[in-house]
Amino acid sequence: MGSARKGLYRLLIWGAAVLVCAFLVLLTPLGPWLGRGARALWRGVLRLPGIAWALEQWGATPTSEANLSQTDTEAIQSLLQQGQQARRRGAYEEALRLYRQALERAQDYAPTHVALAELYYAMGELERSIEELERAASLAPDNAFIFSQLGQLYLQAEDYEGAVQALQRASELDPAAAEVRFFLGLARYRRSFLDAKAAVQALEEAVKLRPQQAEIHYQLGLAYMRRDDEGDEERAIAAFERTLALDPDQVEAYYHLGHLYLSSAQVEKAIVAWQRYVAASDDQETVALVRSWLQELEQRTKSGGLER
Image (tube, rainbow, N blue to C red; front, side, top):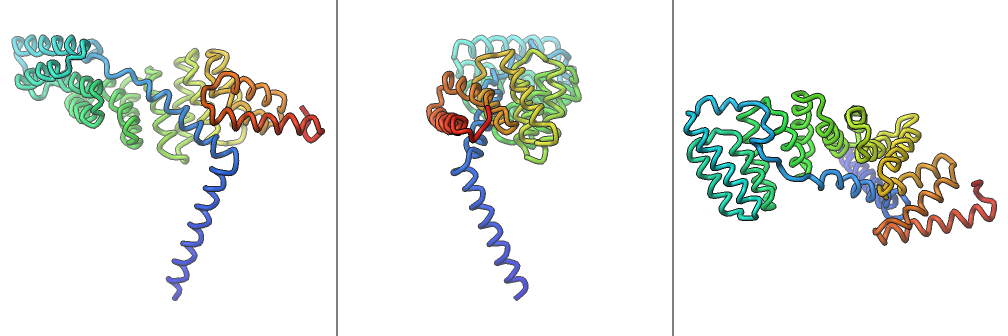
């Protein structure tokens, strides 16, 4: 009987939790805020330019190359270069044939697997691209470039645990790489609400390395909002203001600043931020919502319900 009661209580608690979440998402400004934050976050990930050419980015001789003769190495590199040229022309099948010829000469030559990952990525085959990079990482465990690219692909595949591990390894191998710390922050941010502290730390380090990169400041502002420690509201405001100073076209920052200004009783600034958002955003659904907030704010300020 006791276990039955416990089961009933659990069902009631879960049911209540679902109703609360539905209320927050559908009937309060928090729902659009979460949606905007998630969509904006992915802009940094979805701009992933593809996997750079392995032989240009390698930086160190792969251990697998030690087992190859000079003739084999030269032949493989020639095939990879021809394959790269074919890929750039959009001749994917030709590139795939050339890369497979390179694999026939040496299955364990890491640059071939990186080149294949680049090709599969260009073909829209994310899973196969990840498989090839995983193979390359196992062959070259001390190569930061491979782990960085692998982590970014894990992010696209929504494998946040894998992304954190790969990007953490890349960060250990190349501590000065701002891009790695940026994506590591994103991976931690997406992995769990509870990991917001680690996300903030990684993004703060990225800001130190790339202080003029607006996107990092923007993502740091989102991370502060998620962490929500004492003083994080002010830190988020500063991060979004810095974002706009570096990139005035970063429309999403205006959206979040409106909420933050309003929360900190800076009504005039909130109105200005949302007006700029409405004027610049192409998200008509959210623009309509923000317009309704602006109308309410204007009415309340005119009636004396709010001080500007």
